[in-house]
Length: 307
Image: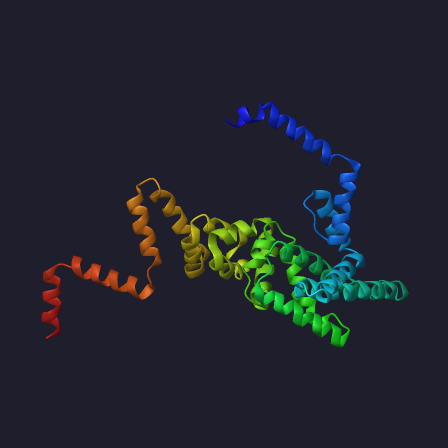
């Protein structure tokens, strides 16, 4: 069916017309202007220019001006974008000052340049996340509060951790989706550490293990990154087993699970159910099982000895 559509003369003619229009210099220039002056576009060149302009103060000034015009006209104002732009202007100013200080002090002020760069990177990433609808409510409020704090103090200290973690998280593959699952500054910090540990596999690992993956990841130094990835192949149940019983016992479990896999789904399901029950219940079941299999004469003999 797809081949017949591709061979349709009318469809081919329309496609050629669209490509010809998109290839025109005037069209490309218009899309470039959209990205530069609006910060958004439906073409790649406009989107690239929109993001690139945020690297410089022009992008932040554009967004502040746009939101101010909206406010003056009684239109909807995106307070999060306005707050991000305000912090972006402050970060750019701090970058310039820190860079000049670094030259004057022979590199002693270099750490300050790194800190302001991380904030600026966070501004850029969070602007993109906002346009994609991936900024959670709590983070929008934190950005607004942070902008107010920066305005009062003239310093970026109030937002350095927040934006640094946001930048660390958002720059990873699937990072915007992970960002949308955070609930407060602490969970953002944990998610950022999670992505630093598992890199571009973080989004997949979180999709499999959800909050259980985050919990286990905090013990990556003890459990081992490779072991956590292996546990994730068994789903959340595998991650729970690893978290509860440790690396050694998980390795034994995974070896047995490999044998169970070809013995039938019923046995595999039973094994998973046994793994998931609490320790006290497992001990009780083991005790009952032992009682059933102990010969009755032994029980009678033990009772007589007790008398």
